[in-house]
Length: 317
Image (cartoon, rainbow, N blue to C red; front, side, top):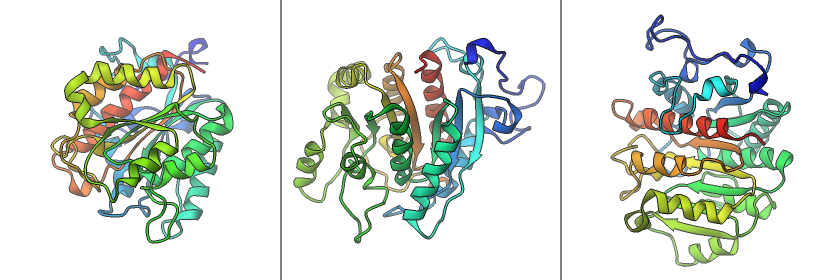
C-alpha cells in the first residue's frame, strides 16, 4: 500500500506555524485530498452513553488541537509514521445524540465505509460506547480479535438503568456477540471501587485477564507489555484506550476519573512495547475537554494516537 507511493504528510511546520493551518489531526491531509490511504484518524463526537460527567462529544476536536505539536519522526519507535504509510484525517462520523442504539448503528456503518478498501482506523471519541461498533467493524474483516483494553474500569457491566449500550457495557456486548477471542483479551490499568465482587467474576467469565494498575509498581511497563504480548500472541489485536487509564494528574479532562492511575510515560512505554503485534484497529476515547487544564488531557490523547499510528506503520495485515 503505502510503500509503493509517495505519501503526503504534514504541513511543514518550518513554513507554516503549528498554530496555523488546517485543524486536522497532526495537520495531515483530509481523506478527500488523497487518492488512497492506509490509516484514517476519524472522530466520533458522541457522549450519550456516559454515566457521570458528559462532554466527550467535544473530544475529537480537542485531540486534533492537541496534535498540532506532533512531528514527522517518532524516535521512540524509530519510525516516520506519516512517510511509511498514507495517514489521513477522515473527519467525524455524525451520529444520533438522542438514540444510543441508532448511534451505534451509524458509527458501525461509517467505519465500515471508511475501512472498506483495506485501510485501518484509529478512532477518536467520544465515549467508550463507540468501541462496540468499532469492534464489529474490525471483526467483519479480520474475524474475532484479541482486545487489549486500557482503562480504569472493566466496561463489562450488563446495563445502566436498563440500557444495554453505554460506555460501561461495550465489552460485555462484544463478548456476547462473539467478537473477542476468548482467553486472549486483557484489561490493563484497572483500579478503583466496584459495585460488587461479582463484577470480577463476570469479567473472568467473558475470558479476560486483568493487569491491575498496582502491578505497574511491581513489574513496570516492560513487564506489562510482556504480559500483554504473551496473552494475545499472534492474534489480530484491537487496542482500546480510555484516557482515564491515566491518573487524573495526567488526564484531568475525562468523565470518570480514578486516582492511582498510570503516568503518561508508563502508558506510552507499554504501547511502544507492543511493536510488531498484528494490530487491526484502535481507539482513544473519553477526552472531555471541559474538565481539562492547559490541554493536558488532549495533548496526552493526541500523543497516544500518534503512538498508535506509529505502531500501525510497523506491520501491515
